[in-house]
Length: 423
Ligand code: ACO
Image 1 (tube, rainbow, N blue to C red):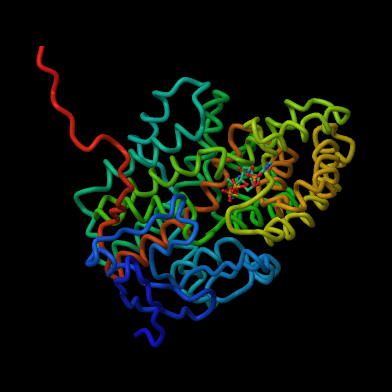
Image 2 (cartoon, rainbow, N blue to C red; image 1 turned 60 degrees about the vertical axis):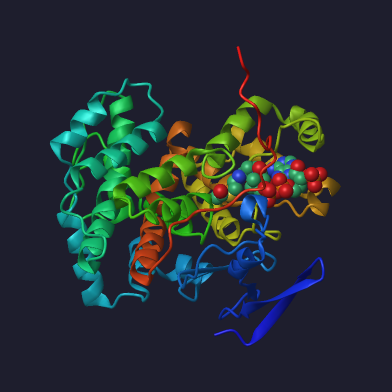
């Protein structure tokens, strides 16, 4: 399998390690054999570590490239809907008309919420954080769908995928409405996926209409978040899945990982940061704090572990951001104006230029979501809806290919051995 070899020499002893070439991207040195020489490898944060083989998503962070199954994110955003991208991620190809119609009707048939989920939801106080609620609701699905699940059966995995894509947006909308003490509005079969989502979130009655521009913006936000190879939440889903855990429990774990402000929680943190800055005249002082190595403050929505060039999703969202703000006529909203000022000042600042810190997708998605009237505490929940097909496609790929339980090692720095104190 490997034509190339890498030779590692430690204390005069050498070992040849196989080097694999991916279809595109950097070669990969297989270090698994190192244990036979008594060595582990050390890579906190997994900055150079490949954890799995995957054929779903490719990222070149230096060049600002993101592709799903070989298609560029720009083309997908231009020509496909979110549901088509869901199909692409899960089945590996774009659907033809018949396949898409079948996929849509399978999703529609799963758009029902069972009583047990209603009871779990109703047990939460109105002010519960929506991400905690989502984590619990999807966790509750693992309790409900357990005995019948055979993760080694491809059909069962597909039902799981469809069920999650169908129900997660409903749970998200119900979570919002529960917080507002409003009745749930069910999805309508004649509405598109994103349109239905906005309908379930905001409609007063079944006949309320949703602006196509806003539905498209929502669809695009879902699409741009659909998958992002082995990020923290996806790696969490794979790690939990590697123990053969229930797939709904794996997705609940992914939701927990996504919640953090260094990951999916960043779009919520962007708005909180803008509110904290409060006034454009305070941007310089805030930037100064973010640049101070002794101050933990960071400019939320800036920087990315992988993209050391512009995040291609942020570029696509810039256009949507202008469209939505134009439609809603909110060019003069002070928070949005401040976001623009902050972006302009940070992009011309040497600190950000030298560290190649650019706005990421969350910088713009947070601003668009605010314009759509979505409360800040729901932002990461929107990310959950978008990322669900990616998590489930990655889990499905892992289970179908064969895998080992994920079990990293450590660089132990504790006491070697201590005598237990006698009296
Ligand atoms: N504001 C100010 N300084 C920053 C920022 C930021 N947002 N991001 C990185 N830096 C600085 C670091 O302090 C460090 O400076 P130094 O070289 O002087 O020590 C340098 O840039 C490199 O930063 P790292 O922490 O090594 O970058 P890493 O790849 O580990 O972190 C991360 C990436 C977590 C995304 C970081 O940029 C960050 O915290 N950004 C803000 C949160 C955010 O927007 N997260 C969303 C990520 S996208 C997503 O999940 C969809």
